[in-house]
Length: 140
Image 1 (tube, rainbow, N blue to C red):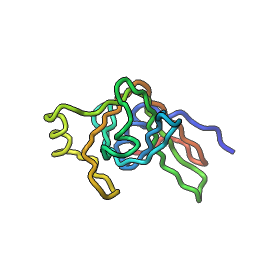
Image 2 (cartoon, one colour):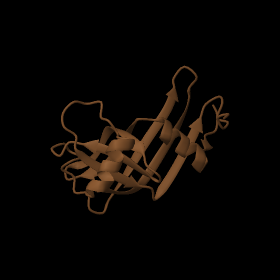
Image 3 (cartoon, helix red, strand yellow):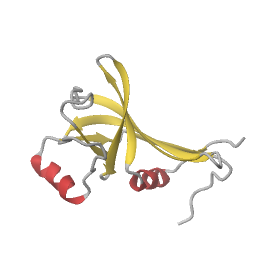
Image 4 (cartoon, rainbow, N blue to C red):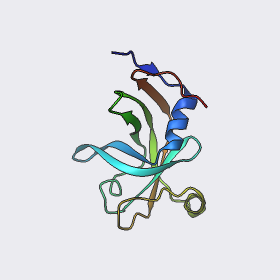
């Protein structure tokens, strides 16, 4: 068994920028929820889209703090890396800001249906861990 290694900020950002699917964890009226979303890294924040009628779309985002997780796992070698972002989440209401994301790095959802509500999760905490036979930093 190997000891987990903390990831540096640069390693965390590299894993976030390489991914496209993560999970948002938040507290809804009926209790904790975890929802997979397609996302993009935008500076020091995560942006994803959701339907206005989904559990995410109906969530009251004003001053909501959420967790967002991305993993890179290899079951064959029992190794992987995981990054967790914690921070305030808010609906993106500024049309210019939404247009800027939509025309550049749009987090295009895999699920069907209209997903026109953009949500931004700003970093207040960024942590990551690696575990497995080779927990050294990736070579660049």
